[in-house]
Image (cartoon, rainbow, N blue to C red):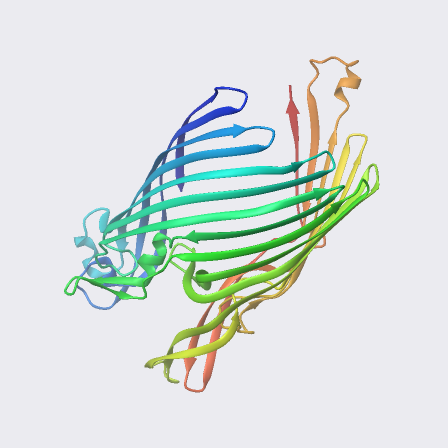
Length: 463
């Protein structure tokens, strides 16, 4: 169970028709826990006994998140500009409580025995400036150049005992990011051409550190692979044409990564997907878009994405066992090129919309191609391609007509959502664990099976 309380104070002021100011203060408090019954080593609970035992334990989280956001905006016929800054502070406390342990010494445990506690603090500050310059601003022809510059500073600190390794984890790390973006758009009689280049940075999460490094107090160093910040160089080029009856478009993109944080297919104790750095990787592709207004009350739109998502020169460290499950050693397996986990090559969407006399209906079909559950292109651990279709229906009752046009009459809308109308059997997520033996590899993939056909209905009343 997890509960949150939120508070915000927002102020907006317009100094002149061109200049305005927005400022917000916010605070969020959250607290919650979950409980498990699991087999662990005694040392995991901080006990001196040897062996393993089952125990009921709770993991608790309490966090405080507060900050301020301020921005100033200038708007004129030729130039728009925005300047702003934000400062946020996140404080999170994590601790574990052992309620029961199946062992002869269990009675010696204090009530609500706390077996670990740690805290983490993330201080995040950024400032930015955006400018949009309309070089040409005619009725039928427009050319605009834009730039967006952001500086971001993050400070991570952690202390206490890690719940993953049950060791001390004193940690402090600063990040300085510069995130620029620039581009242009050109419009002329329904045609729109756009291009952009951007650099974006992303810091590792708390879990990246707690799951991958262990602090050695004797040498005051960290054991394990230290997570790195991710950097993206994004190139995009797009074209669309809009007509009264139809529209078409294409968008090309190339995303070049340094130290991309990719999913591994493994999950931690709370079910969160684990990520790891890969040095060289990219995502590139093409998105096709189209739409047509068949009649005034019936239209169709859709898109199709073809992508290539690859890791270059990837090394997977594996643990090898003999046929009796005895540890043999570790070795590296090298891949010149491999597909990034959870990255389908093909995705597509089709949407039909009916809108007539207060009745609106949509039929949406989504197609998702095959996805691998890890970064080794393992065919035995993959999500099969799947297609789902959902139908949404709504009808606005003509209440005002029934009430002779009275403005006080409420608006009543009936709703019905039918998901997976063709009852497709599919899994949309999962993971994989593999063991390596002298004579080969054995994998145990697992999947999140999704619901078959299901129906939701309701109504909305507005006065």
